[in-house]
Amino acid sequence: MHHTHAPLALPFELIDLVADLIDDRSDLLSMALTCQSLNKHLIPSVLDYREIRAPFEGPYLWNHLAKNTHLARRVRTLRVVTEGYTPKLPKGIEEGGAIHEDGQHEEVFLRATFCTSQLVTFEWSDQRVRGLSFNRVSYDQLWDILVVSCPRLRNLDVCDNVNVLSEDSLVGRSGRLSAVNTLWYCKYTISFCGIRPLWRLSPAFVTNVVAHNPSLRCLDLIVPSLEEHLSPLGDEFGEILLPSLTSFSLYCFTFASPTTLSRFLRLNSTLESVALDSPYSLQSLAKGDLPNLHHFWSKDAQWTSVCLAMPPIWELHCVFDGLEDREVLNAFNSVSSTLKFTYIYWTGYRVHDIENPFPRFGRDVSNALCETLRAIHIEYRGNLNNGYWASRRR
Image 1 (tube, rainbow, N blue to C red):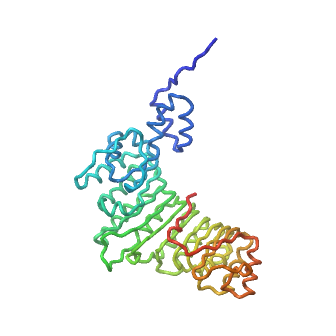
Image 2: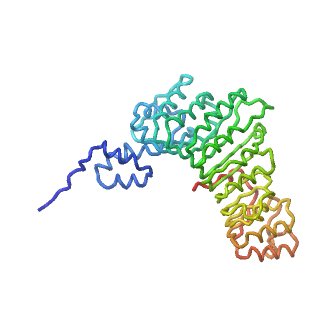
Image 3: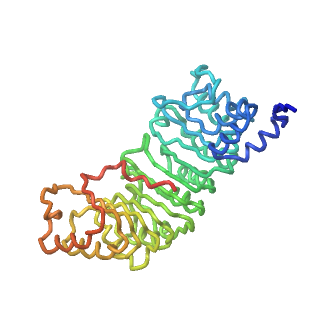
């Protein structure tokens, strides 16, 4: 007897309930490909909404999400980009309906974001957008929306455009930001807009947002320019414990005490990857303080202090400027049993002599270094660049 396969009889409401439990796009696609009826329903109405990339000045999308809240709830990743980026939109959304009235962009964007109640990843890292078109007060409202409407938010990558007129308003904003307390990954960049030339801001809000996210696994803190407007981080930063933190990078922040960063690294012994761009003092580190560190990037001489703590390091990026021959040799000897890759950045020398790959050092130290690093892969590179300091997402 010949049997024909009947169409899937499950109601779409039940299918949607199951799909809502699946965050991974590949798993959702596998489900969609099991039969034609699932394919026709899940791909356009669920899968296409899982990850959205759109410009802030794109009211066609924000209006669509605000009016179709059941579709907005299917968004897991939302990336706000400049208009120069190629958008990634669900099929069928027409690009049009430009808004010209002041404040309307913010209003419709905030209403749409409020509806993305299952959001896991939010990214808005291009500072030029907020500098030109996004209202500062509304940006504070965005923190409130993420707290109230997005309880599943885990990944945050934002450029916070600081443009406040008083220390009191900065404190209020700090309270809003620190209420976001569900993060696993946070890349927090600070830029300044319209700030008074000699004004310095307290970085308490930075410490607050870190301290209120104890589940953080990856943390990047960045001040790309005008860092002179930010006062040093206080001693309380060194007391923050993040039990799951594995990756940490720091760019252009300063500390009131030279031991604060060492205390932070020592306390967070789960760290596997650290990137530092400034001449932070790590001389107070002791042997055993970094028991899980495998990757270290340094733009200054503090890499020697890290090596002398004898971590099980696999990959090391370092510079030799300002270091004595024996300092370099002792540092490499301390980690030679685990080190696999080292990247040496020369700022004033070029390696021409294969017989002496460390031309700045004496022949005896150079020979000792060659012997110590004999089984290690070495690459010589040019000057470090700012874009390198982004820690890996795990």
